[in-house]
Length: 405
Image (spheres, rainbow, N blue to C red):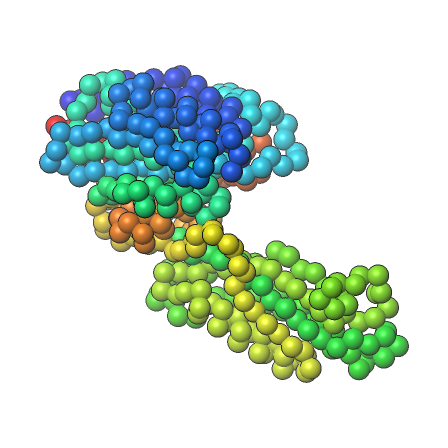
């Protein structure tokens, strides 16, 4: 088998058409469009000879799973990616569902997060099948729903017994090898002060003034207990919601009185050597200091209840693991330069389904996908060369892990 000839056989026009067809499915999370795209992916996998089908995650809600069976004796490799997308925002200048491809970019909502990654794994497998390459190990493709709901699709796949020796999660990293990302959760903080009329402001405890003091301190936090500097580098907190007025009923029609109640909501990102509990303890210590600066202020912090949504836990894989080494080699072969590897920003602050495959299935894997720099913005797009190079990287990774028969 000539690898250069195999890479040259990739039908680049067909690969671009495939991702454009994916973009044209309006697959918002927890809408019928998710299932329609799942049906498209299942049919596409069946058409190239994979053992493929739909898995029902919730009544009437399906995702697509497929396997290219190996002859035996090689390691198996699973690709994981989600089909649901963020909503379209204001400011688009192209049709977000049009699947536009020009000389430079593939455009569309969800193309970066993460239909280009999904399409790249499919096209890598299709190239191998079309070339008649037989593998020892299985290749498993999982195109899941509900990642934006905490990864319920991947959890369902894992609970049904889907496994492999290694995995690649195709979230957008601009083709870098992400070996660590943070865990994430939402917290709520309540500040209770003492109201007075503006004429007696000196007697009040101003909850809004306390919040203004607190927010930049939270946004600058690094949490305790990080095992090393790299773990500390994935720490981040952000307050995204702040509301203050009179009482917890937020009577906002009486601005002449000093506000006595504020509720904040924020998100925290923490490392594998930390936990939700240690982060909440650090926030509690920060609030204790706030109470000292604002005598008479009462404070409370809790993790926000998220119903049945799975926790987004941190992810880490050793840099010298087999899957990381395989992806590193493939990247250098395709691009001629060493692959950026590690806890790299901004993707180290993501939450991904890689954590579910690590913690729930005990699998070793990596996060590496096309897109990222134009993610979650108007005219979301992926560089055409990045997408096509990702297909080659995935193909070479499959050959390395699964081994030609």
